[in-house]
Length: 582
Picture 1 (cartoon, rainbow, N blue to C red):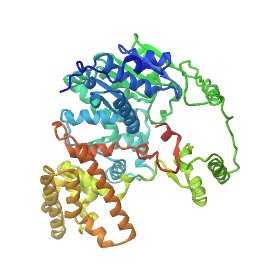
Picture 2: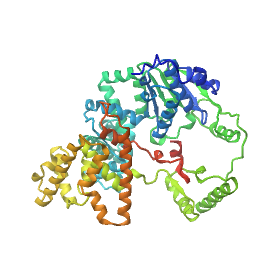
Picture 3: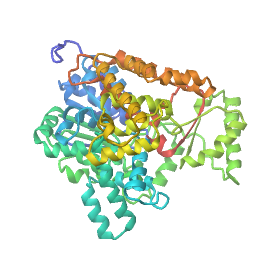
Picture 4: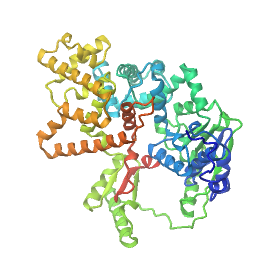
């Protein structure tokens, strides 16, 4: 094992590490003890400060890499931070925990989920599975009209409650007190939803943080373990944390109180999804001994843009005083064009892109178009198609949302967690096996009556009243899942996926169809196999706490829309302002 404290030569001397930084950036890097609030304006080099601070702790403060935690909001930001730290630190950077909030909680729960009543192989439910489950709850369990009581609205309410760490019982009490029929119905659905997730051994994204907090509250020794482990904690975009994320960070930081948060109240845009800007504004109240450092020098923008931004920001009511400045040149004036209609706006955008390409030899990937909501992209897309301009829509139909990919992932989830009834229901008749919706409903009713999963109900299918011919098909399906579970113990993800595609007949069904659509689906499955191969090559079999199937599925469940943006594609990027911020 490498001795980090006797390694002889550091990758960077302290002067090298701080070289090229302004005074405030240097101050933030070397201020390592106690609570630290870095108020970082846009383009002020906050990522550089964070990564150099981590490197400084390892290289010049003799801190063990595994005692450092850095939390960001997106996988892409986490990857960028990881790559920068790797370049700065000679040894041990791989031991630094750099992750999103959700990835951090998955890693913790994989170790101790049993303490909150879940298997370590729990499944992370996808948004589509959540919608399917909620639609079933609203229509079939609560006997409500899904047009009047929108399942998506219920899921949004549940997400808000979870972000505020409100349990179903408390949500129902609040709803009853307000005498709001819609909220009462949502609260009742919340309880049933949570019961169904538990039965499926599944958590949704909001559960990942909420259950980790419950784990820490119910198991002080587990919390103490992570408090001792994470001696130095860094949190990026602190202004966008919600109540659950705020609570998680503060619980972890109570051990050594070396908490460094970076953010800017002027950049808070996620209030609509539960972010509480007061978290950053109240940091000095939470930590009376906090040091506050402002990063106000901007390296990204021109003087003209900063002047405009500062004049807009001055109107914000709740903010800490800060003025961005730059040594960059004044630059061009900001152009404002008021279009007559959406089509006129689209043509104006295209005309300017074509002009820049023609006169300044720019590429399509030099351009991005931002809008407030996804619905606003339609007219722009139509205009781009007519003008034969290539574009990529961030937040559109993702690779992992395609039917064939969701099907194969459902099979893999069943391999890791046979009690995942949502995945069972998805693929019990994929490819077609002659198991109709009526039979699946009977099986579901039997499972509900006995409080068991669909897989367990399938093993007792003779007691369900399902016709013998269909019952035989269900038994064969359950036997196949049992076989997969045995094969999984010795197989890689790629080998297991290939076995599933072959034994289930999924691949044969697509080959037999011999349509352009089927060929496209086969190509997508080939692309999926390249993903599994990459995972197999990078997975560490020496990690005793790691399971390849649960790790692989968790990695894919945490993929975001922004992670699919390829910077090398020569296309114009279209996205919402919120996606761009992410």
